[in-house]
Length: 197
Image (cartoon, rainbow, N blue to C red; front, side, top):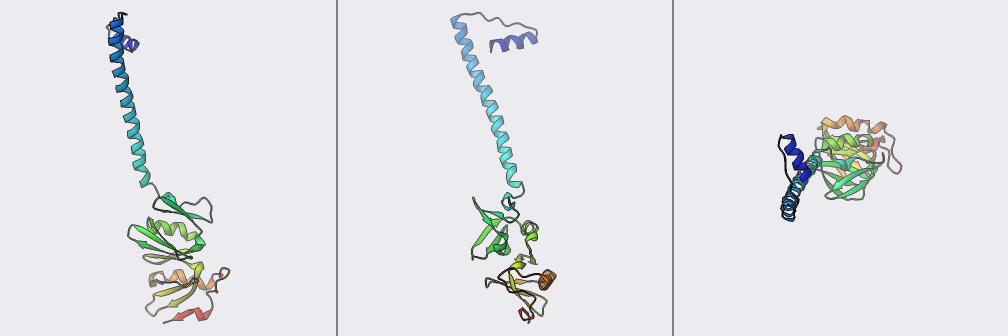
């Protein structure tokens, strides 16, 4: 620190006279120790503020839980844990306020923070499409469609669950007759599964 003081005062057009003695060394050491603590504390505060800003920006980033490392898997964040889901196991997805609820073939349900629009854009490639303003359905798991006179419809899934759809999204299920049925699921283009109410 003596050399820092000498340089600073020389740049300012003055001089710093350091007289080497035990009293001077102890006096300078005390000042230097305080200066080092203040400088280190300032640098630590600056760095910790920078990390806090990074942490504050991270939640506003697109939700990472729904990005998949494999094209056949998606990850859902359920609180502090992450759940790996095969899209084929998703029966339906429904909006629940600031959350979306995933209903799986084994009967489990997961409440995930996010938007239905974000889920829809990610799941569309797996034939999981919007059938209602607040619901998505996995068309590969549909066993039958009950068409209502009002234009609304009800989907029956291969696990016995049913889900209502609205007439606005009826074109999404109109393609069911031309879809090939997955293994173990009755084909949807049979006339007896399209019921008119």
